[in-house]
Length: 154
Image (cartoon, rainbow, N blue to C red; front, side):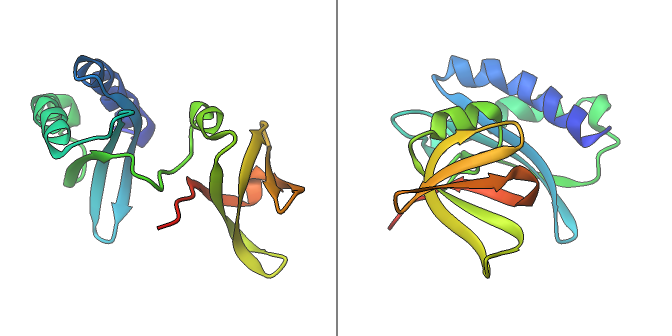
């Protein structure tokens, strides 16, 4: 099974499970970490996510993931967790949600001698990311952007 198909199927299964618990589905990823794979489901709720929420979604997903259609997957670990304070901004709806918020952007290659920057997200276009940084607008080509995540100062 292709990664995109797996993510689509898991997302489709998770959406009603999350809605039934008053949660929203933030993202689903399937990534290789070292020698093993991680199937990660990230959930969110305005009031916060609790361990019990993660446990409910994980237990509800287990029987689905045990179905024969998933037998071809390499061994993996399922994790269900909060999207977190420094959540990754990936989907178009994430960028809409994060507009006006501080974000950290990292680059594939150094840009002006730095590997990343922090600024307020102004907008995301198809191939550009526009940030406000120190009163200046900064336009970034999405092809140069490795990751965008919500900025949080501890």
